[in-house]
Amino acid sequence: MIVRRVLSAGLLAALATASVSACGAQSSEQPAGQVAAPVVASAPATATGPAAADAAPPVAITDPWVKTTKKGMSAAFGTLVNNTDSDVTVVSGTSPLSPKIELHEVVDSKGKMIMRPKEGGFVIPARSTHQLQPGGDHIMLMGVTEEVKPGAQIPFTLTLKGGETLEFTAVGKDFAGGKEDYQPGKDMDMNKDHG
Image 1 (spheres, helix red, strand yellow):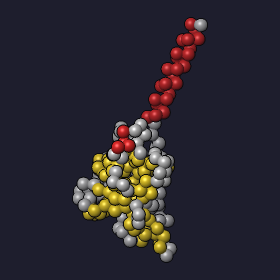
Image 2 (cartoon, rainbow, N blue to C red; image 1 turned 60 degrees about the horizontal axis):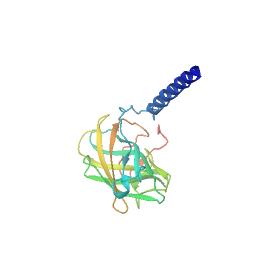
Image 3 (cartoon, rainbow, N blue to C red; image 1 turned 120 degrees about the vertical axis):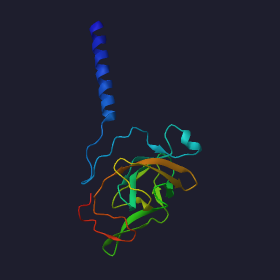
Image 4 (cartoon, rainbow, N blue to C red; image 1 turned 180 degrees about the horizontal axis):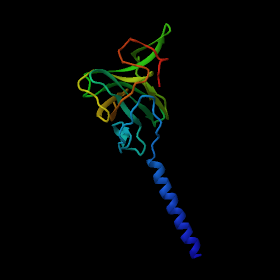
């Protein structure tokens, strides 16, 4: 019996160590041209309001990041998460990095990919996610007030339909992608090195 308990305790310790190691693992896969950002130990950003005290936040964002830039325009990305039983809509955003932020989409217009404001905002389906990514929906920053370097910590506040807010910090990352320059209405060649 003593031997069994020792083996069981050893097995449990090994499993616990493996579990903790797996939680700290991070995927090394990145889009072409993207430089890894520093690992930031923090919980996903969550919405504020009465329901925010629940165990699972009603709305959150995972892996938020901002494309590095010296000046002009940039964009922010990540995965919006809706933990509620109803659809949630993001209607606007703010950041001290930019005096003007718009919610944008990339669409096909007469065979050309263009960026434009997303009418009605980003809808996050109930118990689902909404991806913000290069070449798709994104948070557009216009008139960026300072250089965004790799690893920069950029605060954002998104406003949801109904008035609740989602505050988070996005990390600056280099990203070449499909040569997007984030000029509203400008044609984009989405077939060239996009990733």
